[in-house]
Length: 313
Image (cartoon, rainbow, N blue to C red; front, top):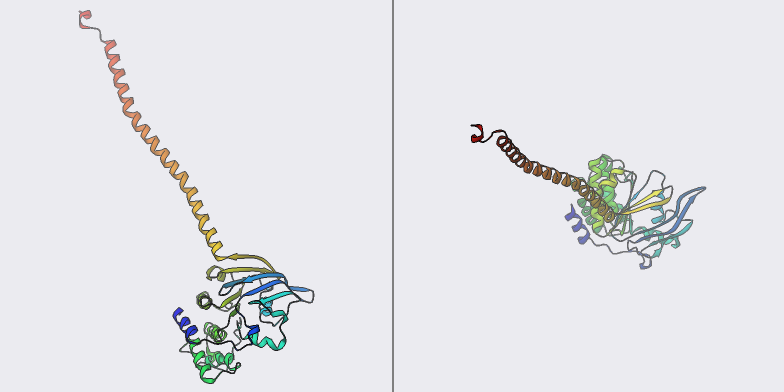
């Protein structure tokens, strides 16, 4: 699968058709962003930095603000306060006419797939490039390559409504990446899948990140957090960032603690074993000495009790 992704990315480069002043280079930066819906603060003073090519998990319970954060990235919602920068460009100040060009650099994978059930897998992937006005031959070539990369080369002509949940999610990923986006947002991409299929989807997303695309996955599933090979986890709760955790920091802490515990457990055992050996050595050394003393005492007593032969006579 990894080879398929490499082939897709290198064989199908896609020049940015947006004006250069809003080209996205896959660096996401939130500066004190707040978004309200009436009296509810969906995002509360969020400050966040995500680097190019990172695979990031956005975690938190339902209603934590994950979907709202995604919608502000692709300008479906505008924050009430703060700034959102994509590769240094302020998204919050974009004119409405520029937003479609921004979105050409952002792929989105939805939890409910949002596929057209009466169209084939290939036709669903076509849509992303047809909107851009690409030539039909290029659209087909790129779409076929994207579906091959997600392992659906034998299901291209099957209607989306006849595909399994895992296959539909793969089509959604192919549709999201066919335009070679700088950013890929996946909202609960494993929510409707069993653990095996979920693991496959996470591996696909990790491979996409490995090719330089910034991938952000929103999830509330602890199993995803445990199994995904992510670079960073951002924890949201009630619209606030309550913690961030880098993968390398977690691995270092996790690797050191068990070793310390093992050393602490091993030292008493070593001390006990040394004590046992020393006690055994002492007892072994004392036994012959005791026997020698007993022999000497017996000989002395015999010498005292038996008088000399001359005196007896």
